[in-house]
Amino acid sequence: MDSVKVFAPATVANLCSGYDLLGLAIDFPGDEVVLRAKKEPGLVIKKIQGDEGKLPYDSGENCVTVAIQAYLDYMDSQAGFEVELHKKMPIGSGLGSSSASSVAGIFAANYLLGEPLAKKELVQFAIEGERVACGSAHADNVAPSLLGGIVSVNSYDPLIINEIELGLDIFLGVVHPNIEVRTADARAVLPKKIEMGDVVRQSGYLSSLLLGLSQADEQMIKFGLQDVLAQPHRAKLIPHFLQAKELALQMGALGCGISGSGPSIFTMTTQKEKAKEIAAEIARLFASKGIESSFYCSGINKNGARVVE
Amino acid sequence: MDSVKVFAPATVANLCSGYDLLGLAIDFPGDEVVLRAKKEPGLVIKKIQGDEGKLPYDSGENCVTVAIQAYLDYMDSQAGFEVELHKKMPIGSGLGSSSASSVAGIFAANYLLGEPLAKKELVQFAIEGERVACGSAHADNVAPSLLGGIVSVNSYDPLIINEIELGLDIFLGVVHPNIEVRTADARAVLPKKIEMGDVVRQSGYLSSLLLGLSQADEQMIKFGLQDVLAQPHRAKLIPHFLQAKELALQMGALGCGISGSGPSIFTMTTQKEKAKEIAAEIARLFASKGIESSFYCSGINKNGARVVE
Image 1 (cartoon, chains in turn green, orange):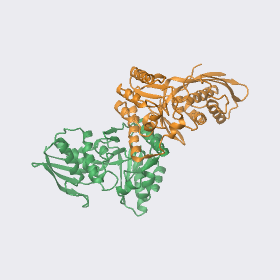
Image 2 (image 1 turned 90 degrees about the vertical axis):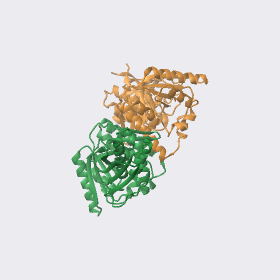
Image 3 (image 1 turned 180 degrees about the vertical axis):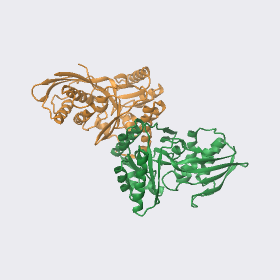
Image 4 (image 1 turned 45 degrees about the vertical axis):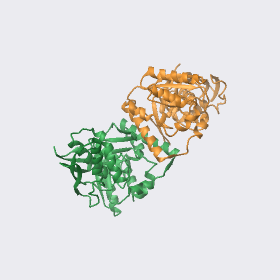
């Protein structure tokens, strides 16, 4: 085996009360990376498609090759690869675009080396890609993109990632309005300190969400899809978010929030058709305001990254 | 039926990462309340035993009668009762002493009226007892004392209490050192605002604890029994707490924390014998420092308040 193509899915991070903690994988969209073994050590990016020229070819600057190199260094491997990156999801969307690329790259490299490491062990290297792409080493996108499911990143030192055993089927409607929210701005609007009362309130939401997902209780999930930490501050960065959220809730969504640092919006339901209808309606709302958007409907992607060829 | 005796159990609140959120019931100790119907409306406290003269006989000041009266007012009932309170657990111990009394009283009154309300609906009235006894209307002791199990008080307005479905057997070792920690002091030492990084860290602990309890994962429970919000500040109010905690962890406890606002200490394990050994060893530690203590070992009390006669 000297070449492989890997798909890694888009992800929705935070999930309202799970700020900087929870993330889930959806089926579509996602990115693809093709690796081809070459004789000499080192990584060479041969092609980047679908990025509108935004991503660097320098292997020391591109998150995919940075992540792969961190993995190869750890494995003490002299392997060399040619890399193709097929961006099939929007950059800067809040759907874990850089994570999907890094994860696809790491997964492909581990595959070509004969899978010496388990999926979960690969998270630490994908995080290095995040450090380059976003300036911070977060795992709430890379972990679900790699592992699938809904995960909770419970600690970074040591790195502890727990998968949530779902007691019911969950569907996501995801809408990506074509506007720009810079991650740095999304971080800057957040308060540095939180009132103890709000900390306790958020803990109640988080508990309700986690227990609701485990115990298959829709009312608990609904109550848990609230957020006093980030959403009140970030809402103003996304025009019409509050109206979209109200629409989603009126249409029967269990909740509606900002995906990662935005601008994408997610809604959660237990019925696939409803997820689709709500996403379409939110897209129509954006269109009526003169904002283009794309939307996706998906269950929870239980597999995460996978070989496609 | 014109009289009843009810037992309501002691409780351990907070559980490290579940500050102001989680609480659980143990089998023993607990308080007993006897109610006897009388012809005239109104509540009269006839006897209080085991309180060393600390508790008021005035029915407008005693948490038991305040809680019962709130219930009777809600039910629009003209019932009258004579009340006996048998304190069988230490006051000011951090084990929900006032809650156990209020809960026993409320449960008894509802029983004598023919159980018009479900157990869960009684929590709101027991909270009124807490308001009188502690100056704040918390539910993290009354809810588990009434309902049994481990509960998460996810909201006060509306009151939302969720029971955690346990995937494994849990045992508690509880040690009550005979020292005084005033609830007001325990509240005063806490910071008013929390750094965002600590909020996220605590969320990771909470997630780990909740998922670990649901998914029967001891390592997750162990990681989840940590606390950056309250324990670092309250530890100094309880002499030798840190040494006791170290001892418990060395002996194989999953975790060790302050019960409620202290001074009682709890340790959690999955083996009854170990819980007992650890509690005894902590009691020996206190004794070696000249501090008397009592200790208890118990599984999770799954029933909560119950009629005994």
